Length: 526
Image (cartoon, rainbow, N blue to C red; front, side, top):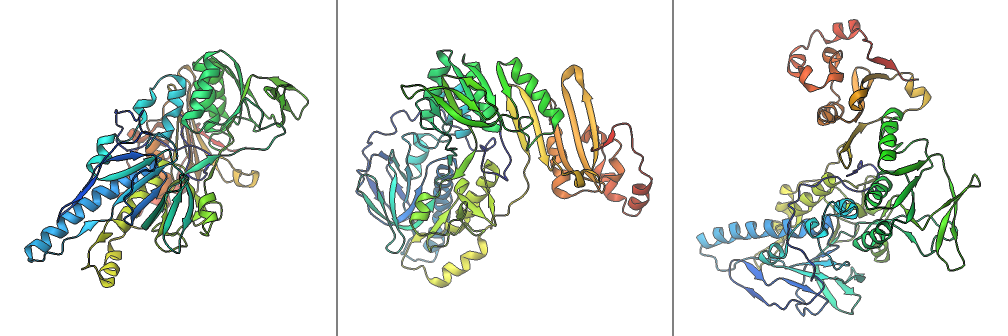
């Protein structure tokens, strides 16, 4: 499974710490009757997955988007509210106060009929390694037990931020006290000539998996535009299912933003062994189409035409901001938020791939989970109680957990091929003059390690084949550790490096730095 770095929204998210559930949501678009009841101490509503027939119009927390961010937020917020309310009401009971608090009701709205599945597992679903039913993050009982109302197969047409309501595509209007936008990202489409021809696809949702699987099982010929993470995932998955696949990439080698040439060449050789051809330095001019409006190939700028029965455009994703923009929220590349996930509009928040914070977009699970945790800390005390005052609300801010973006590493995995990348691995000619490379190769096992060193600090790492020390190198990069004392052994991994001993040697570092010898493993970047 190929995963990506957090600095671009052009890829998918990495492995998640969310609990995977086995119960399928095959009937998720059907109405499931249920009512709502409340007691003095908590709220427990029946689980609803509906096409918009729920008449409960009490203003609560509405979450638009039931992907990995939205579904996790709904579950975690409900859990946090439940715990907070129980503790608060127990305290009030001890004070003989009868005005108990209940949490705001939570509604999760999903445009797709399938709710809360792990999108990064679509690649193994496409390859036939995993059943789609195994990709759900939570099962029906989880939402039901927490009193979360789920509306599936519905999209939000309008947000009225002044009167605090949303309007669904079936005409239903729902009021909100707090609104969370978790609309994720959409596949980027390059408007090549004939890009709307029959047989041009993206790889983003369950419907895409179904369409591409049909091509693959008919042993048809496909072209993937884009040699990034998503393109390689799609090509490998469809080749495993019987399609004849070629990746068309504008760069000199695949994953040219994440890997160095040596690691990329090893990966390209492996891809070819798995039935995936590679066309490098290849720029698309147009999509070839027959007189029936069907794809028949790809026309390159060098004059060649590559034949194909279908084309997959895997050129990245973009934050899905159309609804937010139409609602008057501040939008740049993504929905602009602060470090507590507030948007520019009161009572409206945003999390996930749709957001932008300090110019940065987010596409990995780790930062998105952090955003979820941050917003849970902000909203978990949102309750229905006449005893709540503005002073109470202000005091709660002290318990908020602001989101802090940290550098993240890249782990790639395609059916057993492991690749790791962290930090900076590409450099300009001027930068390269100041960079050292520590390189280790074991050709018999196709193992390759390369560390990039500047001023006795690791600034980048690429591992192929054996990535066990990836987290070790990533931590060195993140913490900007001086590696003078362990430089000679660093390339062999953490087992050969005693960082504790180095930390205790505060006075000799400069001396050792001056006399550190460069072994045969050290090369200058050319």
